[in-house]
Amino acid sequence: MQMQIGQFLIRRLHEIGIKHLFGVPGDFNLSFLEQLLSPSPIKFINNCNELNAAYAADGYARNNGIGAFLTTWGVGDLSALNGLAGAYAENIPVIHISGLPPLHAVNQRALLHHTLVDGDYDNIGRCVAEFTVGQTRITPANAVMEIDRLLQVCWLERRPVHLQLPSDITHLLIEVPVTPLILSEPASDPHQLARVVGRLTEHYRHAEKPVLLLDSDAYRFGVIDLVHALAEKLAIPYAVLPSAKGIANEHSPNYLGVYAGDASLPHVKACLHQSTCIIGIGLRLTDCNTGLFSQQLPVERLIEMRRFDVAIQGEEFPGVMLKQLLTALLCALPDNRAVAPLISREKSVTPAADIAFSQAYFWEKIQDFLRPDDVIIGEAGTSHSGASSLRLPTGAHYISQIIWGSIGFTLPALLGSQLARPAQRHLLFIGDGSFQLTAQELSTILQQRLSPIIFLINNRGYTIERLILGARAPYNDVSDWHYTQLPAVFDKTQPTHCFIVDDELSLERALAAAEHRTGAVFIELRFEPLDAPPQLKLFAQRFAAFDYGQAGPRNLTTP
Image 1 (cartoon, rainbow, N blue to C red):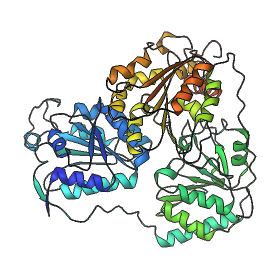
Image 2 (tube, one colour):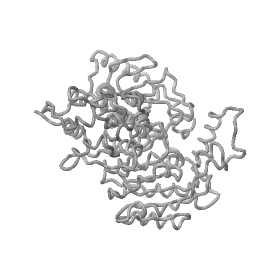
Image 3 (spheres, rainbow, N blue to C red):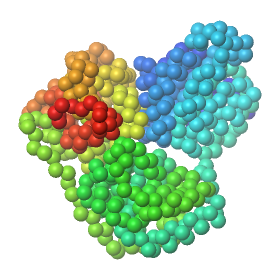
Image 4 (cartoon, helix red, strand yellow):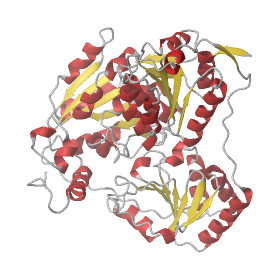
């Protein structure tokens, strides 16, 4: 069977679940974009810039399982690099397609625009290789093999890949297979799997107060249902790291809460620290996940289940696949469903606010505003700190970028997420400083007729930075825009419901209107510059001590 190279790439993308391709047109990718015109099964979403396209593909992948975006060679690729790095750090499968100059120009080392005028067409690939798990340059000879290889490694590793598509080969015919792309889980070594199951069964038999501790890979690699089944069968509690907020059922009697070392609630910390058998799923003990490395998870009490291997009390066992291991343990371990988990949940105490309308008041109202199956997106800083303290309703999904922490990520990610799950209500919480980095992508959201509820937290600057250092320093200020006028500027055809909230009554009116919306809602919330969730203030003080040392600068007074 013969097919054009570009059409074969489109076919393979669609087979792995891509229905939207984000990007920015440029002369080296226009030939491929022609092939994406109707009746293509994939819709091209024209973003305002390449960085936003990468962020949107990331947000799309978090709800769709995999995402993709398109740039043009050189300038487009490097503009998107921060988005690729974030997807790599957060284990998000994203396919980056770069429109390469024509193959004849590459082979002749022609001095083209968008290059460094040195004839080197490998420099961009070397840069991108640092932030991807697979790279290739498509030719007519390797197209079938390389396209399939890259898509398979992206899916297997749950990390980005980089595919260079020369502009003069997209319409060339090649021989292609008629069979669909095969995506299959690798198999465990059966003897190693049996050995590990036996060791874990014996270890569990002598364990005191066993507990499960989950990170985001439990969701990324599709084992969260197995984890829930294991917790239910064994009647043991489970907690999540901050980067895994929202991946587990928070209304289960087995759910403990969020574990972040010394920054955890007392009952969560006590349960983890008293257990002799902590079963970790995909743990990555970063500074933000552990309250600045204050975790107490000694290796002799820790079982680490990772994607393709296991560590039991520090002893490594390669060749054991996570999904197969959990399935085997479900069969091997005893059924304790009759034993109800004894979990005493403690609520965090919110200090009384100095003023009536405050962040503490706002997040309390948002808790009541949430619905089952909502998608909640929390921008780094104040927004994530507040949103991560919410107890999510059944079926709700939470998106943040806590590890890479690139501010401005969430607005374009909202675009991708809502295109992936258009039927679900999307709530975005974003600060004014972060919004200003990627504000133009609001125009694409409105142009696509999406209807999110956007809460813009206006503290007139970078509140999280103020709390760490420079509480009243001008370097933490941002310009105070007329935020609620922007939707009308960005989209002239369909009005957005806009509200300015600065007291309890205006918040009540805005939330009531948002409940019955028929389109997008944009709510600007005006708070004092140093008003923030209490947990963020504690976090900031810890980071100041960690970052600047004993002799370094500090805020003169505690904000």
